Length: 379
Ligand SMILES: Cc1ncc(COP(=O)(O)O)c(C=O)c1O
Image 1 (cartoon, protein in one colour):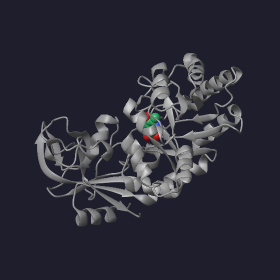
Image 2 (tube, rainbow, N blue to C red):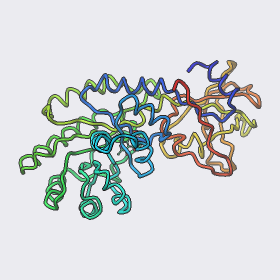
Image 3 (cartoon, rainbow, N blue to C red):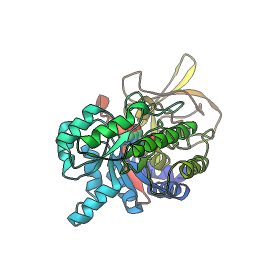
Image 4 (tube, rainbow, N blue to C red):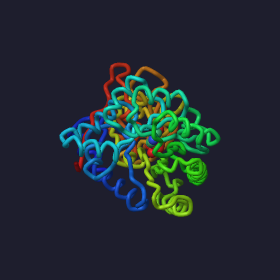
């Protein structure tokens, strides 16, 4: 979005404002499909679960990765009017419940929808058998997350050495394992993680097939596809080219490949506009206090280890400034070194781009400040 449009919207709707550009969502989805034609894209709803975002991606043809019942229900809203058979087919074909650890109550609720669910250990097999015996299973593998901005492999994933035994155990208990999944870590700029994960998956498939489990034929390559936060991030096209050649080498055409992109689809669709509500000089540094912060739209600084540089609408001599959020907590620091004009005044607006993923999604009401107003454009 251009600067004057952003400013106009902020003046009209007030701040803090979180703007979601639905053209950008559609563009990102189309880019994903264009460069990875063999891959079915399941939007990871957790990245931003706004129902309007889910709706736009639904209309664009996306599938969905959900990881809680509320997320499942946001997607379900779009299909609840379908005839039962069509709705059931949709759930089976286009929704995966990709949280390897599920409460028994969740499994009981899920069972009637017969979805695909992930698992990664023995206890979970027993829980699924007991509480959601109609679900299809996908085994989550532990793979290297080296260099990813958000590491996930310490929490989830069966080690490759135990993978086929778990598949066998699931089949022997009467369940059906449909495939394998992995996650290379979010904002994965080390593409080698994908190569290693694909090779590990191929060897698990081969061993499972050798033991007679030919039904295992879905490969879910998870998320991790990096958003272009800065120019050091190699283009998606480069990653896609590498992935396509590994697919070709490792997986016969009957293997269905799916992915769970979250950040890649939604990060560049979000822009935040904030207002300066206070200024100070502390230890010779210019400090700006703004009306949004790390308990709100900028929560990704804490939870997602991400940074969102603030930019000014006006020119002028810049200097290294500190930018703080509105709450009384010193943790509420957006940046201690953000280059901005030194002459900004109360009421001036600042903005951050590429803030659509893992941002508003983890906003709180801390200190009495509500989340930013959300504005959808180009819906
Ligand atoms: C199981 C799973 N799939 C997909 C995603 C989305 O990942 P990303 O936003 O890196 O694409 C996540 C993120 O945590 C996840 O845990």
